[in-house]
Amino acid sequence: MRSPIPDYLQEVLDDCRNADGGAVADYIPELASADPDRIALALTTPDGTTYCSGDADVEFSIQSISKPFAYGIALLDSGFENVLAKIGVEPSGEAFNEISLEENSGRPRNPMINAGAIAAHSFMDGKNADERAERFRERMSMAAGRELSYDESVFTSELDTAYRNIAIGYMLRTHNILETDPDDVVRGYIRQCSLSVTTRDLSMMAATLANGGVQPVTGRRLSGDRAVRQVLSVMMTCGMYDAAGDWMTTVGIPAKSGVAGGILGVLPGQVGIAVFSPRLDSHGNSTRGVKLFERLTEDMGLHLM
Ligand code: DON
Image (tube, rainbow, N blue to C red):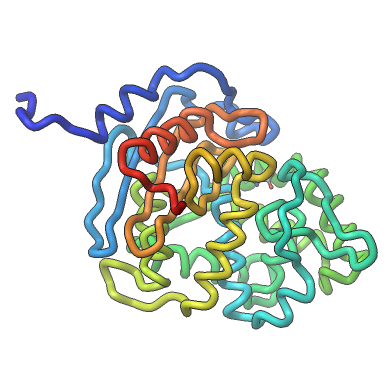
């Protein structure tokens, strides 16, 4: 029976469902087979209540949405000073897969582009790719509030064609930004990107950030305030890559996108939001996902300014 109470999230979803444009990422062969018409929206409040609509329980790979979390874990495991010495915090104004290293130091400009994220991965505890990926999976499971796992087909598919990231890894090794085997670090980074999540999971992770690092359901503190502030700050300036200015003016909250079609947004103290739609724009951000956030901002006044 149709509910007599209008479902706001469903209405937002239906409004954005047919927005034009965008194409599923195909540089990772496994992502090319995603259903382009999937769409989902989820919101989690600081008391741990999640409101969802659409395909919110469909799994997809986290991809670049892993980057802010891996950066947070790197800060925790290796300390601010060591991480900041090797990874900058300035927007690059370039695409996510550009080399974007500072001229003399060879420091990647920020931890949201691939170069900075590959470096950040190496600062998580663990002797090798498998141990670091396992550390990442455990922490992310705590934030999601359920046991997460890796998507082996996405992982092998990306690893088989990772020439560009491997090149970035070797550049980072040349500058001593990476201090170990670049093949091993890139392998761990690619595994990190292949973590399977749902839109519901991402909204819980976003709510953990909105909550200053405390998981809203378990009440467990997963990060200190200072690391959360650092992570949200780089998400705000660099999370949407070379569309960061458009995003900040139209939506206005810290966010991070991934090439499988997810976007996670955080309104500090108030709500964690996640959306999913695999069609991407030219910056690698979900076309319909951006529309969903624009609509939510318009209706609910999410914008921080
Ligand atoms: O390294 C890559 O290219 C992918 N594993 C992640 C890129 C990504 O998600 C960019 N975001 N929109």
